Image 1 (cartoon, helix red, strand yellow):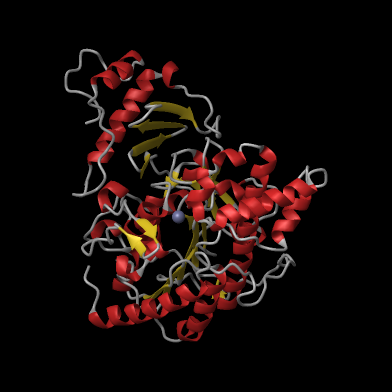
Image 2: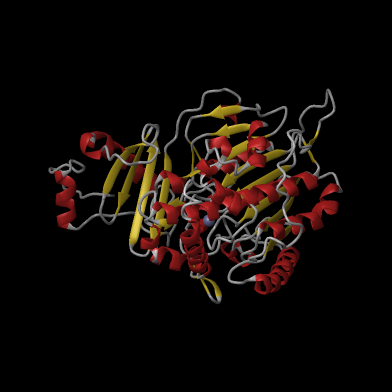
Length: 512
Ligand SMILES: [Zn+2]
């Protein structure tokens, strides 16, 4: 949808102003000092952190509540206490999760920012919105298609329903000039920034947000857990002290820490190119502790920012992530190289007193493509009645204890020549690649680490899931979107045939 001129001007002004800030702080990609703004306290929030203003007795939840969408870049679900981690990295988010409903198995549509955030704001899979390429270079973001004008984004939908729409994001791939201005009254993207930047922006907006009768939609996208990792203290030292080998390996650890930070500063590529250095579990634990400290730091800043907003408990809060991060779980570092659980399972938490049950956990698989219809549904809109369509669905029946038929979760990713696709149906996930291993099947419930390929034992299930995947991948494919994995090479076809994944007597090929 076209952005009105005045809106574009406001957004562009904020964006331009932000770029200047971004450059000033970009050493090497974002502020390295936790000291920008007040240093987060090491004191854990009190049990009764007054996050919400209580709705007066007898007042019903409003038809159009305020909505706060929080997404954190590169946050794998299993580092949250609410998803089973025991290191205490997310005390605030765990407290928030206890006030609402936790979707235990939420799947992102891709393993990196560009396609998966576009899914969140459009309710479409990557092959449908087509925003599936892009790189960050010295001069900025290159080769990234903007969010198409004709797609009706989440803020556009909410604005059309009478919301005031505000967004602050800290990943350069979500720039206003890349289509993310659509639907926002105010949108700030200053390139790569830390959580303190979001806090400062939101505090500037708070007086304006408190005025007027219109409900508010606020989107905060945090970047901190993404590499390059910054040493966040005191959290990093606390985690290091608890690492089993911290004492015996104190001196070599310091050398390895310096090396890890040095590589991390050279941006993610250097870290990944030096992957051998991290095969040793002791070395790897330094990276995990750097990442864990970033997660703890982000949790603390979210606590501060949300507390400063004095939200009514009627507010809908949705918390999620764009994708996870791997620490050699499947032989890699960072993300984008696989479609395994450590990258694809993200936190998905919804909170709203009087509507969403507190302390409820939903084990049925859901998807980030469901985020838009769910938010629009809570705001009283019918996403199906709107132009633009979506591949997602409103998840409200799941927290209301009503039946909702299961839907498969599709994910796709591309890195260089490697194209990968996966589909989760119930407990099973099939992964298909255009490089070996070509096809794998996992039971992601019993085998969360995805170590045992069940494909050879269950070729019929694989075939059926691949057929479903092909059908989904053909639905609404956008011109210019990255192609699906197509296997036409006779040698590869022969191999798949031998594995039982294609029928020898089928003459119409594979992957269509
Ligand atoms: Zn990301």
